[in-house]
Each structure stands twice: as structure tokens, then as C-alpha cells.
Image (cartoon, rainbow, N blue to C red; front, side, top):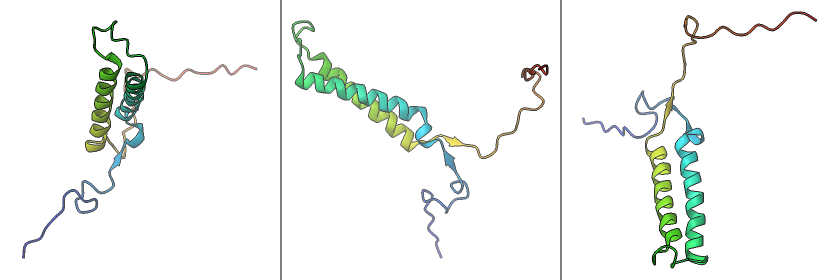
Amino acid sequence: MSEKHDLGAPGTDGEQEGRHTAGAFDIRNFIGALLGLYGLMLLAMGIFGDQSLDKTGGVNANLYAGIALVVVSAFFIGWARIKPIVVPEHIEPATDDPTRPAPKRRPTGH
């Protein structure tokens, strides 16, 4: 009587159930998207644009920088997918924090 438990499937583990992640609002997604966009532009310029090999010592700098940015972009997006940020369901309100400033009062005059 051996039971097999799939720990990766949602609903089989109490910790996995009801888990909320940052999703598209994870900063790693924004960083990965921007680096990927710039990387694709540099990659296109390295392939189709003026390579200016005399300025860079015979190296196609746009091509190699574009490849590096696309690889780093894939790393950031993969990192966000593999290890997502878990958002807690309930956050205690800061009611008794002495360092928190009081709200400003609006003037009551007409």
C-alpha cells in the first residue's frame, strides 16, 4: 500500500493550495522584457546594420552585446517562472508603529 504524492501538482500539498504569486508584476519580468527588447534591437543592428568593424577592432560589438542581453533576459524571465514571488494573503496593518507619521489634516475652513 504505497501512495504516490506529486508534490509539484497544485492541490496535493496544503502549502501549494491557495498560493498567490506576483505574476506579471514581478520586477524580474519587467527587467527581462526591457533587456530582451534592447537585446533584440542590438542583435538586429549587428546582423543587418553597419557593423563598424574599424571602430571596434574587428569585433561586431552590436551582435555580441545583443546576444548577451538576450541571454540575460532569458535568465531573468526563467528565474521569475521557476521561483515566483509568493504574495501573503493577509498583511497586518501598522496601527501602533511609533515611527509612522500621522496623516495630515485638511483645513476645515471654507
